[in-house]
Image (cartoon, rainbow, N blue to C red; front, side, top):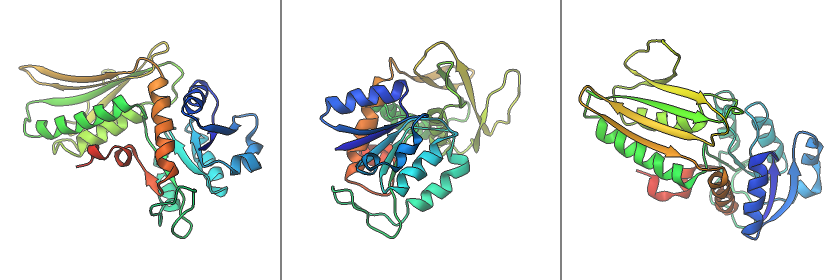
Length: 258
């Protein structure tokens, strides 16, 4: 498979190593200093582009790739609130694609987006949803999330924390939405608080706590390095190569549905 990389920081370089180790070819690398390469023949030859950049540039990167009919795997967060509906529209009318990269449907494009590509986080998310379903019947427990990342991370809460919160809200009737936690700031009982901490070079820790007067139930995922994210991103690219439309981790891991 021919892969283009959009973003060549620590994640981009690790994705490159994983992709090469799995027999794929890197045909184009685009970073902040060579954005004109979106118009190159090399980029247009890619089967899939893997995009890990910033909330400010992700949407434009996706659009530039779509202009060249290149499928995109994106792990950038923080852009969906403003541009999510437009991207959904651009990815509509797609059905199963052939492995050669063709598209079915008028104007259809393909984006595989995930807030976190770690296989461990995918499992953790499934456990999170199942636990929330169980806890819906136990109103004495209040639930909140905490996420810790490296000091370079721009968005807060993390996209993974928001995804976990949405999974809980979808199962627990007493929670209607999430709110960003602030020190000494009260919040309504129907809101799910997400606390964000920034410390050193932490790859990512996500913790969900159900607390009552009697006890506390805690589940947590602690990433040891970025390698798990890179492996998941390449697995997503391999899946995207033969599928079309707006794709998610739930599509790749069918056992997470339901």
